[in-house]
Length: 66
Image 1 (cartoon, rainbow, N blue to C red):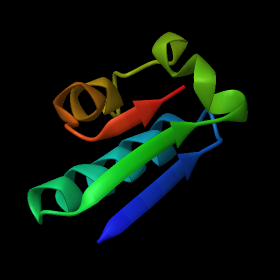
Image 2: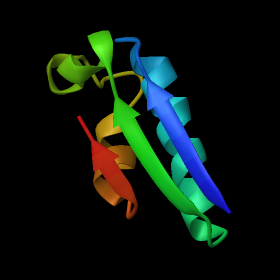
Image 3: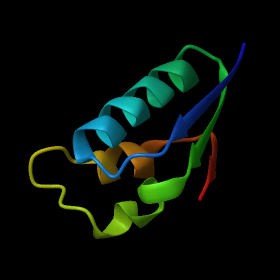
């Protein structure tokens, strides 16, 4: 199955959960693409102390667009 996840918020919890979903899809054999749009493009500047979304992003094996 082809899956597209679009993230447009700069909320660490939202990014974390969306990327967890993307990683589960990859593990299940789906073709997953993630697009960071709007406020989400500054994800690298957001705090990761409570929700380590960067770990999820770094382990993602699908297509990732900013």
